[in-house]
Length: 133
Image 1 (cartoon, rainbow, N blue to C red):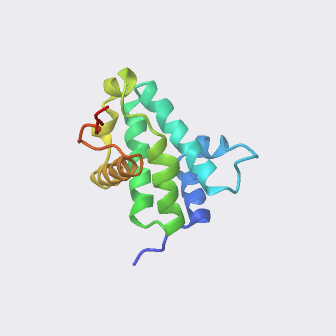
Image 2: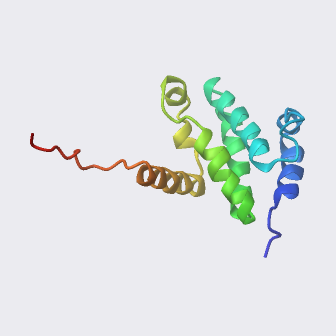
């Protein structure tokens, strides 16, 4: 079995694969998993907005590999601080077809996250109930 990717391993892999992104982690975020993951999310969103499909695919492939072997805290950070912070709607995302670039594992994780968020925020397909005066 492959070694679990914990926080320190995630940062090592990020630094190896995307040194510019790792270098952009500011002093306030350094050492904090969720803000560090958020830095990668912002880099991915910038690539989506600029329609850099190859970069978006590289980021998604990297996160897919991380998620496949993630320790629980890293898995949580992928969902909460990466996937939840990406915008897949709107003109720029549509031009990039960002949602279509997701790997199957990330597509499944995003679908589960969206279902969960719909559930906790009370979005249903039923129309709201009305009361008679």
